[in-house]
Structure formats: C-alpha cells, structure tokens
Image 1 (cartoon, helix red, strand yellow):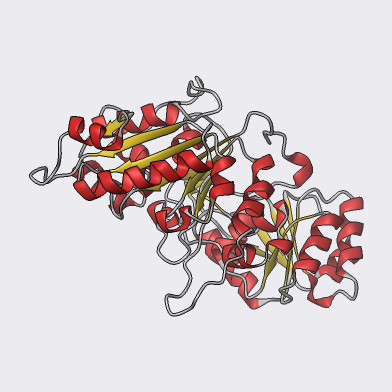
Image 2 (cartoon, one colour):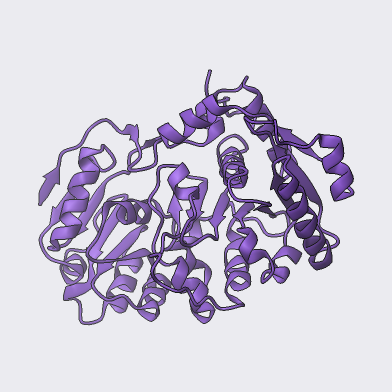
Length: 403
C-alpha cells in the first residue's frame, strides 16, 4: 500500500477558488496511471491527504473486503462482473464507492450506480472529475432534496454583454453560500457560456450528450456531468468546439430540467436569448423570469420582444426587468423613457461598478464573494436573489463574506 502525502485539510478546492475541507480517508484499488497521477495532484493540493493506493483493481478489493475508509476507489478493469462486485462491496459495508474504468457507456454507468456506486469516472481520469466524484454523496444520503418548494429562475439577457451571466452566477453563489440551499447553476450556452469560468471551474463533460439524446437522461446521469463549486453549488455547462454543429433535441432541455429539479432547492438557468424561442415549455416551468438589459434603444427594443414572448409562453410566471447601468451613459435613454417603451416598470437597477466586477473576474470568484458586503453592486445582487430564494432570509448561522 502506497501512501500519498498531503497538506493541511482546510485548503483551496481544486479549481474552485474557495476554502473547503479536504476529502477524508481514501483507499484506491487501482493500477491505472492516470488515476494515481490524479490522486497525487489532489494530495499536493491538500484535497486528498489521506489517500493510499493498493495495487490491483475491483477484484482485489472484493478479495480484501470492504476497508474502513471514507471513500473506496476501485478500477473495474480487472473484474469479469463489475456490477456484481460493486454490489458485493456495498453489502459488505462500503458506504461510498467510486468506480473508474475505460468503458464509456451509459448502461454500465446506471448499472454501477444501481449496484451501490456513488459515481463512475471514465479513464483516463483527470483531477477535476475525480474530485467531483469523490465528493459526490450517495443517493440514499441526500436528505436535502426539495420537490414542492423548489424554485427555478431563468435569467435572459436582452443583448450580449449586459450582465445576465454575472447576475445568474451571483444568484447561484448567494443561494448556495448565504442561504445554505442546494443550488444548480445551468449554463445553456454550450459554446460560449462563462458560468463555470466565472467560478474558476472547468465545465464538466456530458451536457451536450444529454441535450442531444434526452432518452438517456436521468438524475444520476446528469449529476455525472455537473461540477460542484462547493457542497451546495453545482454547475452544469459546456465548452463545445466552435467548428462543430450542435444538433440538440427539441425536448432535451425540458427533460434535463425535469431530471435535476427533484434534487435541488434552487435552479438558476443562464438562458441565451437565441434559445428562448425554442424553450416555451421550459419557461412555463419557471417560478421566476429575469430579463436583463442596459438602458440602450436596442436593449429596450429586444426587452419588448422577449417580454412579449415570455408573457405569451408563461403568462402566470412572475417576470422582472433588471437594468444594469453602463459606464458610458451618453448614448443611454432615461429610465422613464425605457419604461414607457416596454410598457412596464423596471424592477431592479444594478449600479455600474467596474472595480468590483474586475476583481471578481480576476480572482475567479462570484461578485458577492469577491466584492464584500457594503458595495452597492453586491447589495443590489442580494436584493434580486432574495426574491427567488426558497426562503427569503439568509441562514442565520452563516457569516457574510468579504469585508
């Protein structure tokens, strides 16, 4: 058995940019080089200070019995019947089993999860995917899933660059960290989405496959494509090659939403305006819609068009207009003229604050995490978030971040 030395347990998460506790004792039965390298890198980051490697694989683990550890990591390559072997380890008391192997097959994935595995990672293993799997909770331990009281918010930018993604990311972070609610942040711009980037995360793999083949969607399969920023915040996005054409099923997003909704108290969707016309059914399932614009003439025009479409598709869903102020106001129209043009009221005005936004972008953090509590921009984002949270009051036991 080879021990992997590590650092202090309260360390910066791999690629997440926030302080989280290290993973507990890990025993890995594997001879795969990529898995061992990933464990070594996690140990160097302080995320796996108590990891040890046993030569062999799943068959060796079955022979040895279920060791006393927080996570049992097994390579299924040497097993003639990996599903049965995983079930055997689960019966022997292994509480958190993570499987790895070279086969990328959804049927195998589902069978392993049904047998008792918490997750399955396809080799070659990379640290980002491994740490997500090691932190994943088995389904029977998820006690914080919300059904009737779950909230879903679609954030739509009337124009590119008006700040819709910043608002979506900030809302997701606040709901997870300051309200303590299990939150999914869904970025549906598969080629240019920046939700994961804003949180210093690498997008998971699998969202495109999910949306192209909705018949393969279930909650556990979707969870394998998610990247967790923290215990309560999970991000689902993509970074697909620009030279490829995406063939997304018209039913894919609706099926995806239905699969993840039972597991989260809040779902925040960064919905590109180019996708809105094909997602009328999704809009109907929202509990809140935010249309984000600047005070430009084109922004007013497109807000009118998007508002009309949203009202037609989801007439009973609350819809708020959010204005993000720009640095250059010389070509802006007044708020009163904007309201007359859209025949409605502006619900929120987010102040221009280049310093706070630049600090957050440079640090790979959400604006509320980077900007402190007293800055007008952060206060505005908190007010917006309070209207869509399951509980409109932040958890009392949680401290405000920043100075």
